[in-house]
Image (cartoon, rainbow, N blue to C red; front, top):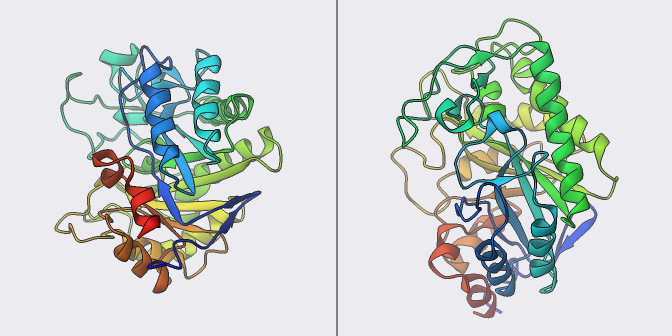
Length: 336
């Protein structure tokens, strides 16, 4: 066995993952008006057949104004529960657990798509998002207390739908310049209230309230994780050095695991393309994390994955683009 650490089981909340390889969430754009298609069922079934320890489904919108794209999966009141049950069944037949990633695009949403005014922590243009087929993102309306409560409750309702559809848990999306990441980043959070962008406690407050609401809405054994944009890599943005304190604040709310990717830089780290280019984020988080830490970013081989486990820079390894190129990559690595 060339990669003994990759083969080690690990607990993730109530789950026991059979190995350390994970399919991270990647937008497939295979939904039809928010509804599940056979292409989606086949995609996740094929990935599960390869044998990773865990699948995390692509980001799904929890509220209509938080929709990021036309072919994103709906997890709001229009959710296709029967279709979602087909996805979980296709994955579970291979004895692999699956989490649904829940997201709200915030100021990354386009009125041309949603028909609604975009929301954000502050009236700041989103530096992570440029013009697309929907045009340039508009200036968001700062969220009032009623907006904060409604969106928080939308995350909780979506998590309950995931439980009803047979998912093993959910991942709350707070990366890639979407709403919860906008609260975390000082570049997009200019608030001066309890959610102030000037302190780490203020920047994590809304994330913590969403975690609390999700945790309260689902059974105790339902897994809840978070994906955090741990670094913006922009002047004045969020920084890796903040992560030990941020992780301590967040894990106190009952998280079962935490994953790291880019913040306003989305899923690339400027100037870096080496395997594990977000490892400085996961390594910083490991200083205080008492829950499994997932690393993604440019890792394509078993040797690379084993290295990050052996050096205690992460507990779980996500292979994204490698799996898109070859859905059997998990099986091939584990059989090496």
